[in-house]
View 1: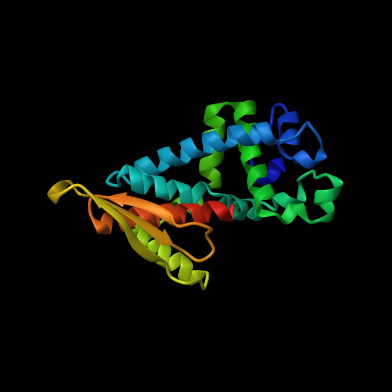
View 2: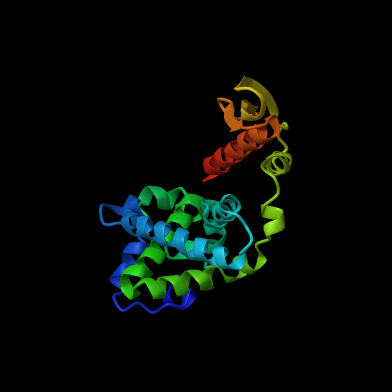
Length: 220
């Protein structure tokens, strides 16, 4: 595993814990996963901040979310053949847990946390940037930063699902101080998602953004 991830541990027990799923027992990787998630979000945020100096905070947040979500981590984990090294309890082993996206993603975050504990911040940052080098090189701001309604529509079309419908719930205020409340209705979600804005268009964009965020979260 050290050869695969190109990092030599001083204290190898960190790596052993990072590779141990909670199904094994109380000594598992969940605490390291917590650490790894936190430092991963910071390092990717900083990398994007420098890579896209003219992009605003909201768009940077969406770019970061696309890189640190579970599905992206699982792809990186599969590239490392991480499933071959994960220690699972009998139940998870029997059900093929080493292929499960959530387990792969969580284990990779735990390894990041293990590197942080073993080598400190700079080692963890170097590890993450190496891990994400190709993904960061290929990230396309123009594609990722399309308006939320377009991105939601493209997401649903890719899943062969019905396109969303938007409805105005209320309009408060008058003239230039109006506040629109809009809902976005998408097949597969139990309830409609609300969006707010100073115009109908902005409210719909906000509703679409909230809906897409929820759909992506449900995938994790």
